[in-house]
Image (cartoon, rainbow, N blue to C red; front, side, top):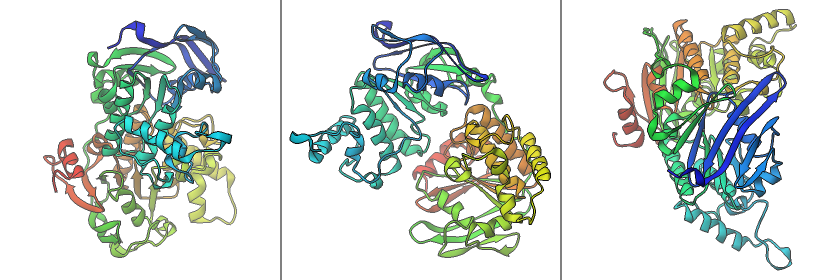
Length: 500
């Protein structure tokens, strides 16, 4: 561990408020050269506000930021970049119409005599940067040809293409599976070896203990503590984040599933799904695990009628339904919570009220709207699901990730859905919101609803699922049903092909 003389960033007494909200209160923080300093906390803890101050988006109310021997009270975005601070966000995107190399040097493309862009030199420099990180990415490819992990690598390489001293990574592995995450974490460790200080934000506690040199916990705008990785553990970090001990985060109560309500028999889509069969019982959570690209999402999209099948049957309560479009599935009582809640689950620029009621209106198609009755039903479900919002006319984009996810669930419950498909139900939400979502899922199954749940989080699969189907290369290679089979090591062995 580097000594305090290696500090490249020191923040003192940083404070930032928004109307009605104290986002940061007297924050002290430091970063050392060549370290990975993980920043963790629930949604709303102040992590995003903190890094947006460092990147120049927000101006703090008070406090000081020291870079080397210079002191600042705020940055503009240009000043932040000029002083070697680079930030990558979960939502960062590439320009798909150009090469990976051009994306890496976007904004400062190499030029020759006469000021003309030199593509060959751009590719050479970009490939040298990627090679220095021991990665295998062909930067001459178009960005649209890259895999999700390669796209994320290019986003980070773009940040490193300047004279970077401090790299801020905000949820870099949120959309990646286990193998892809391992590649990215290896890259991040290589960046540390270059002497760059890294501020790493993630909701995945296992990642924290994989890469962190130090860990700082934020809660409700306050810094709870900073620990060297070897001097703390997962249980302690989580308890500081949420004020609970690890063992009480979530344990699903005992329950008993009922009769079979859904049978998927021999489902096949050429080149995507291969002869998949399973059943789902009333009151059951059937978990589906597997790497990204294993066919998990394609399977549930086909069941819901979003994708076409080439063979097989979808049988619901003894009736062959084989939905060819989502509306047919919705009419049967299906609901689908996609993993991309912002892109396809919600209308971000519209109020909570409209988002919750949209499916109900499309299914029932009332001739006249009863606004008073609509408001009553929406208010009831907001209260039941404990959605934190100033009111039902609040724009859904202003809610936290966990509350946005509850709004997605609300729209399906109001529509009368009794078979719910959850694709990564807690992606991008904090530990406290996860607990609430888990409890809601259990309440739904207790009330007789059935759930198919895709998750990349093995502890989540184990905590919630009655049975777990493992997908690999478009095939459901195993369904785990007994307590002896339901453990993380066995799941990982099937996911990665150690067991077949």
